[in-house]
Image (cartoon, rainbow, N blue to C red; front, side, top):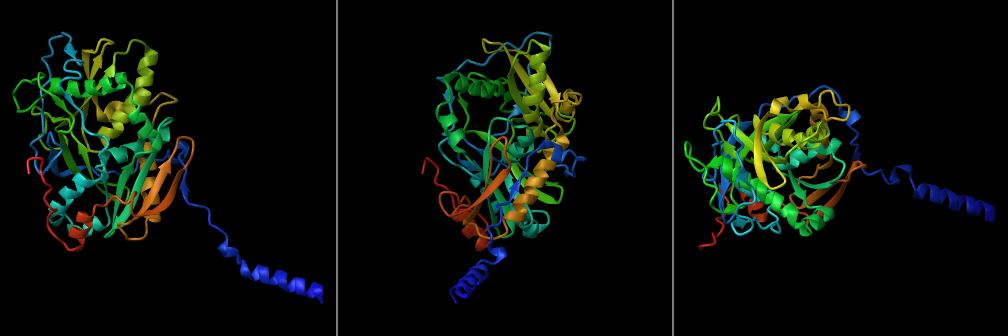
Length: 397
């Protein structure tokens, strides 16, 4: 009798644990560049939908007031000799990096313009909305060996929103940034001051304050594979002499880098730095990056223009170089992965995509604070179809 009871008990246990109740492995996305080496995916030529500016107090303005004009020094064979240390730190107003802005400025622009979007609000329902910088991180991921990232994703009214979350490691790095690195960051902004004027046809004035709160942002529309994209990115300046005055083809990206003296240094520059420059400028369709090469004393000794579409030529024959197709195919795969993962339409539900070098992209689910990033004013306005966001009190109010 006992043995029959035991069998019955065993039978019960089997019934209580049906096979489909086994925990499913969490979805993940592999990174290996070899997996993404196919042909270059379709990428629609980016078109500018509009722009906005952020002022010295980081206040939003729906216009181009912060746009600057490219005004390089005359090319007479002499070194530009710009002193990139000039004004540091007494004429420097860095942005408060503790303030988490998320997508707020872009969402403000979107609220003001969603009625005028080509294809209407219906187009937005199938689109992905994010910052250009977040897409740049995705493009460079297959070749990144040092810095991980986290992207929060929420679906609301059909639209997928992607917003970066500072990783604990990045936060520690930011808070313990050595003085030399802080100075190098300043030098990048100072270079822009030497190369840009406030009005076309005027000479730059490098005597003023460097204030990194000020920004001009372009809002662009594109499509990668079958993913419609609406993204925004900061623009350094516009070239009044450009062959076409149509943005984004008139925009110029400005960069600084240390002087190179050996073939090995150039090779490393092409492999690592040029990849980031390419990704950052290719996405918004900015045709040229102008680099100022600085000596150890912080003076710019030479300028060189890198056309975005020619950057890959520098690594085409390098076995350890990067491949634009791999970058774009991985980005398209990630966007598909995100679209298929974030199925619930709920602005308070956040899927956190995390990646560390050497591993796959993983995902976890969160609700509300601290991960929810779509602001209540945006959610309410879109839900009630209100045309514009509430006015933020300016520092003067």
